[in-house]
Length: 89
Image (cartoon, rainbow, N blue to C red; front, side, top):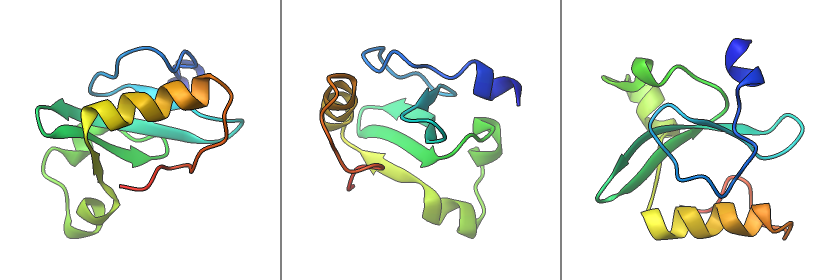
């Protein structure tokens, strides 16, 4: 998958909608949106445009996390410390 090759490995990078972050060997998540209420993301590599009008099943997989908590979570992983993956919402 092309998106897999372009996954972001620098976890200190600020998230943008559509970004795919690589947490481990085969552990990825896709940022759906970054808004004032937080960062919405889903586990895995997905096309963020398919979540514009999510089905009920898709909506259950979306995690909303406050922006500062999200950035702290990524920085903790980048520092090599063990954390829950994906983080608790």
